[in-house]
Image 1: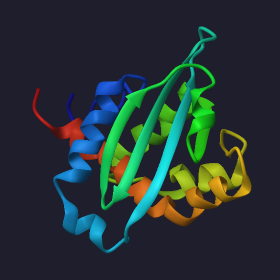
Image 2 (image 1 turned 180 degrees about the vertical axis):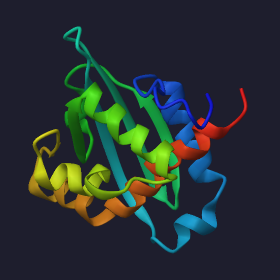
Image 3 (image 1 turned 135 degrees about the horizontal axis):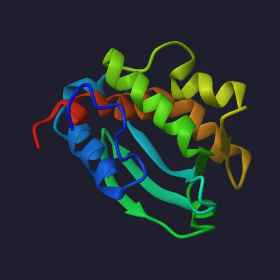
Length: 152
């Protein structure tokens, strides 16, 4: 991937493993955001009718778990974000282009408006965790700029 390649394979588990590696390699950047205790699932609906699902587990200032999950397993996470793959790709393209998400392409903006990516939880406290820790989630997602620029 190159910095000009905005068509990252965001619906592949290796992409999220690379984001977690990027986060874990830079603890100073995440330390100021505070400790996180949350599992979050991401659901990306593909045009073919199926969906890619990943679960990320945050512990302290690390992302210690990245797993592809099956249909319905997102309900086991504290919360989950769901949207069409094209909307996720647009967010990541914005991150690669600007070095971080800007404007209405931040995960906070996308979920607050809720017309493209929505936040869900099995209970209100799970949803609250997303909004409490969304800056850490955004910083992890912003790592896509570095992942895209990495050689190989």
